[in-house]
Amino acid sequence: MTGFGKVAVMFGGASAEREVSLKSGAAVLAALQSRGVDALAFDPAARPLEDLRNEGFQRVFIALHGRGGEDGTLQGALTLMRIPYTGSGVLASALAMDKWRSKLLWQAAGLPIPDYALLTETSDFTAVAARLGLPLFVKPAREGSSIGVIKVKQATDLPAAFREAARHDDLVLAEQAMSGGEFTVAVLGEGSQLRALPSIRIVPATEFYDYEAKYFRDDTRYLCPSGLSDVAETEMRDLALRGFRALGCRGWARVDFLLDAAGRPFLLEANTAPGMTNHSLVPMAARVAGLEFPDLCLRILELAHVE
Image 1: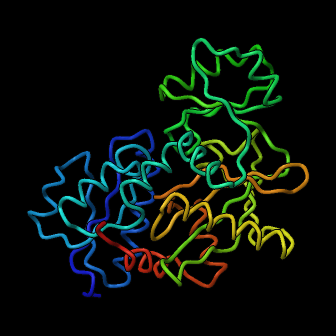
Image 2: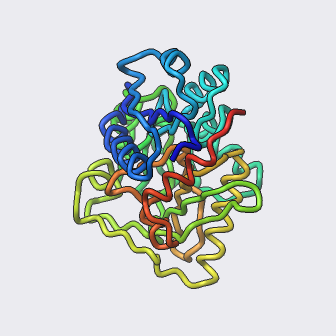
């Protein structure tokens, strides 16, 4: 397929999610090549971005996860180079990567989110635990793949959890736990063609959906269809689209949810360069919607843009 020109599949990088990115990128590269796309691997940890222009690349498929790939910095560089790239632009990428600021924006838009608190060394940890309830989750605000996330069951463990999360980021959140289950909704397209794919319910065998459960365990269960009623499914998909649009996202993303005990959905976070590994959720939802993995990759590539 020559319509895309020479395509760089950008994966690897230097973030804490490098290992996952290598898996995502390899899958995307193979899929695009299987459809005749002139796609080549490009690891920005091994070569300068200037090579994109020097070697005549015409599009970039971003399969970089985490900082340096999903936080607006790469998007800014590609925008300056005038090379179309997949996914969201600078601002939306930066907002979605920052869990605190995305929460602030969703709150301002009147969208439901779990209760949370910012933590510092001087926080009243006992008061935070009393307000949010136990268990709760502590997490770095600007990491992905559940890196640095800790489930806290006792208030006395909260200071140590804060210190562990702060090793990954100087911005740390404590977040209310919810008992109604964890779900995710992929969003794909643009304009009138923007749509939310079927929701997936995530049922980890571990304490919660951590890094190991996401990428390496085979006993995590993914339910798609998720088992929601038609009304609840419609509500969740609509909320995913509203959260996507509020952040200014483009092309594709994955929006994660928690349900409370009454079954009400709350926006958790948005991922603007979601995983594309054999454990990943966007390809799973796309298959249920009738879109096989190579065609999903082609569709994402079609949506590449320059801001």
